[in-house]
Length: 135
Ligand code: T46
Image (cartoon, rainbow, N blue to C red):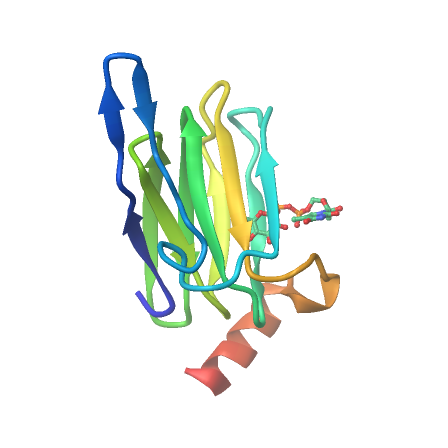
């Protein structure tokens, strides 16, 4: 799908546990300016329902599982994230919805910019208009 994709990170496995290093400038295709994480989401709750105009992000599920639905005017895809050293890159102008959070799911997000509500498109019809002009 446009402006998105699965990223695989190195996993260092050992008898004392596993370690997944993720380095700015090497593993992430943008400078990381912000990190946030989402926890304690009930299984019947869905989040997201927006696109960003400019923001680049990588989503990592550190514990449990969560589904991410991505949409453009022409495509739709569902990706299940879990703690398997894979992340999901989502670039500008991709609609996203997060749902089916398992118990104790932890979704960590690396973002290319500080929080700004001006960067969000939260109305789906408006998103379709803007994305149809762009893509
Ligand atoms: C995204 C998905 C994956 C802040 O104050 N600072 C922040 O950095 C963020 C991300 C949010 N907020 C506030 C804004 C809202 O009052 O936290 C509240 C919840 O934000 P929102 O409803 O946008 O959360 P989600 O889970 O729908 O979306 C979030 C990110 O906002 C979004 O960028 O791509 O996670």
